[in-house]
Image (tube, rainbow, N blue to C red):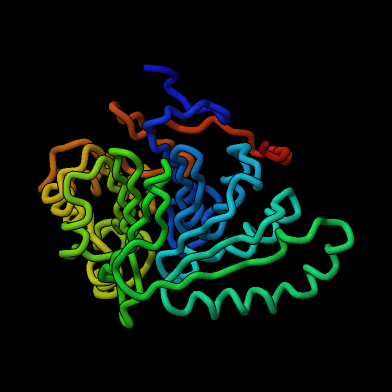
Length: 315
């Protein structure tokens, strides 16, 4: 069975995908819950899906050298999904990355990347005499329709498929499907229940799907009118009840909820709603939850330092 906790540096089996939730929260800044981001490892591949505020700090706590990670795949442009991108880019350069950070995303991503270049022009200029060139660059690839956006599958790597989901107008949000050997991991991004998700996530190994707290509870906790809370929780996002419907119809080996205020007094009501429709394996996501997807699916907390030192280069 192995350890009940994950410790940085643990080897990864050749046929496994390791998924680490770097951020499971929302646009609301919370010290105990970073915004949306997932770190994926499969074979020699290491990359991020989204990079919300707080995620770079959780990444460095895993003691992964920045030289090992130069790819970020973004699902959409809400701040809680891309607000840590600048820190990951510049911070990664200052501590070892000598190649450009490569960013994939929906239409509009190039505009964001170009603005980042402009915003940090002075920052970069003041560091070039002390740091090697290369890592200060950032590159962009846009995708506008469903399909494969990255494919190294036949060489023993991963295939990443982006597919459009329903979030908010104008619709410009894509979920991600990661395939490695015979393992499949699907990340919903932000979405309502939709046909594309039911199709691409069917019988996957791991489905990390968003859910907001039940609307009545969310209204009470956030001091919002109930009608506003319902629009956020049930129109722009997925309620726990509806997430349970998605899990029941897709039948993943493991289901995980993210994008929820995962306070102790929220988890119970959320699970009650999920269980109205789904009785299979499910977890409420938390930051630095580590999920090994192999013949067995293992879910563990990462044991990390809050004050890590930079890690040296990979070979």
